Amino acid sequence: MESDDAMELWYEYQHSGDQRLRDRLVLTYAPLVKFIVYRKIGELPASCEVDDLVSAGLEALIKSLDRYDPQKGATLEQFAWTRIHGAVIDELRRGDWAPRSLRRWERDMRRVQSEFRSIHGRAPSDNELADAMNMTPDELRGRRHDLVTSDVTSLNTLVLAHDGASVERIDVLPSEDETTDPLHEAAKTDAKERFRRAFAALGRREREIAVLLYVKNLTLREIGDVLGVSESRVCQIHGELKKTLKRSLANDAELLREVA
Image 1 (cartoon, rainbow, N blue to C red):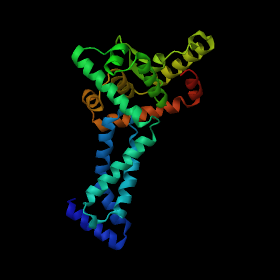
Image 2 (image 1 turned 180 degrees about the vertical axis):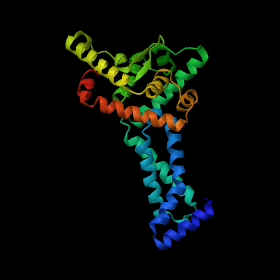
Image 3 (image 1 turned 90 degrees about the vertical axis):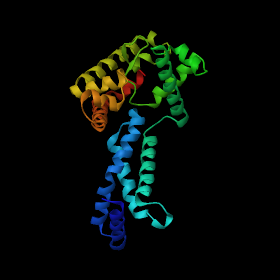
């Protein structure tokens, strides 16, 4: 629908209050919601809860149709874009336990890692990364610990060790000498085994996406190219597998926290 046609429809809706006209406007601008959501997910793959973000965007779209004032100069599409984008950002922040300063530091760390890998052909060691970021190795480990504890879904995700092997994040948490406690070690082993069983129960495509995203560190778009599906489909499958794992491990949440 052309913008002029959309405006004519909006004027009719404002005059009549006919909800069917509003529904037509929502369908007209619904692709805008998905565009904004998938663009933000491309920047923050770890926050890929598509359904929640789309719902927040659609709610903002509906409200924008009632609150739009053409006398203020913006077009209906511009106003809707602003409200949808703001709602998506708010939803992302609502689901993120980490403060913004920590997320900025995480982006800086990933940028430094990427630059180091481009120059040296390998990932930096902790000492090299800390030096490049003007901090001590202990400070680096502290920040990483903050990142892990701020993400309730990250405990069992697969990451790369310095030697290139794939490990679970639970294996690289900073030690507090709890390894000397046999009960703690037994709980840790039990938690890892339960996660492996839950992961093995996922569908083949879900396991492939998890490995490509968390082990191979591919982007959503790159994963889509590898698997021959769209970026949005990859994101949808990723969201489904996270929810499946949460459901499968719901009864073990306390155990997983104990060994974190």
